Length: 350
Ligand SMILES: Nc1nc2c(ncn2[C@@H]2O[C@H](COP(=O)(O)OP(=O)(O)OP(=O)(O)O)[C@@H](O)[C@H]2O)c(=O)[nH]1
Image (cartoon, rainbow, N blue to C red; front, side, top):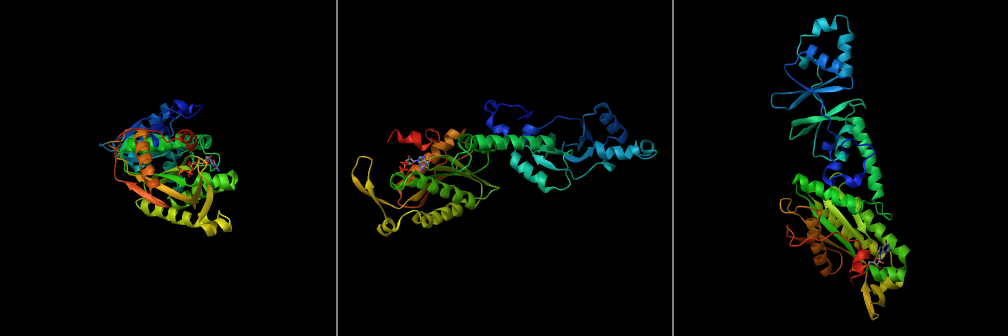
């Protein structure tokens, strides 16, 4: 998203498209030794320049000079004569907004909107581990955020409006690129097919929406990402330190809510009497949720395929347990790779 207009997202590298470094604009910088006169010359020679970052000898940003503020100095009588030879450090904003390049656009937007000092013509500094990388324009950020939202809507699951496969993959790739620790939970309903067959697709949709709502309500908006692969399969990518408790809360709430989807007679029986896929009469207990979770090793997992393999395996293990269960797989690197496949495609194999 480097120039952020009229871009075909399918050609973008997923790990860069929604990060702050995609907003970097290379503009002139000055050091602590620059005088007001020399900075004035830079502004004069480039009318499109709104701000100039001031760096210390280690390339760390220590301030920002804005054309708008600078103009005041020169509009005052004898301004240039009085201040021209002074160091720029006297006239810079020495607490500029500095945003790390690896952060997501959502995180950047959060910083920008929570800082009431900033207005649309203000720039922010983009740094990597505190070292200057370039300037970012607020208007670029807003435009990129709008495009991201349009794109997320395009890839959203139509039933739950949660992000689908493409944003899920991108989110994971982004975390892998940062080499940060995170957990992935693969959530899948149990006994959903007989429920659907017995109570109808519309009721089944309500169950899926309930799972979506429980996951969204119990995860941390800032640190966790809830995605809907399709059908009754959800992926949650978590950086909350208390993610295990959050998953357990979802399970316990679902255990209670699941009962509300049954009629009195089935509730009294503890489930549904129906036929299995081969036509044999079978008893199916209440709907439950299986969650298989893993903590992928960011050094050993090279793509979302590796993470998908780990999460799928954890989900299979979770499904072997009865009822609403969380299974945490201690394996952190995959033996094989698979993709998160929507259930409709899975079912053909059964
Ligand atoms: N209501 C509804 N049903 C769906 C949707 N997508 C897929 N399904 C149905 O979900 C069911 C998924 O089947 P399974 O995942 O095998 O259900 P299950 O009985 O829970 O089996 P396991 O997952 O193997 O435990 C099938 O009946 C699909 O037709 C959807 O969007 N809405």
